[in-house]
Length: 128
Image 1: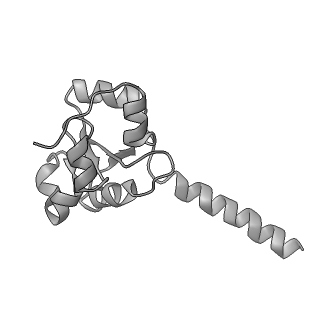
Image 2 (image 1 turned 120 degrees about the vertical axis):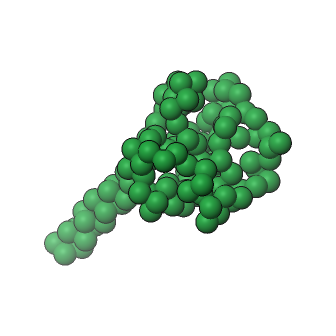
Image 3 (image 1 turned 90 degrees about the horizontal axis):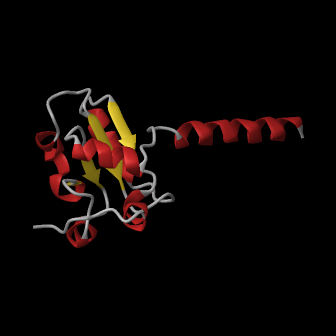
């Protein structure tokens, strides 16, 4: 029983550590960063969803693929924000990890995702 309890507690810590891999950014903070021109946003929803509507100025991760670095700023400390569908969606991790692999150190996650962005009354833009 003691081993089982230890395993359970260890699992909880592992899940908590993994869940906090990228710090969250609020909708309000992201909106302010966009207006100030101080953020690069990565949409990890896929090209069809991206075409329908995405956070203004967001990069289509599915389209950027291996050339993501060409769309990111040269400053490796620049704010990079990845998002996907909403709070339960984990797809954002692929975009965040790709930026991190390219050496970016200030990578965050919009936990609310596109669903929260829209629900908060924020504007989206369709693909051109």
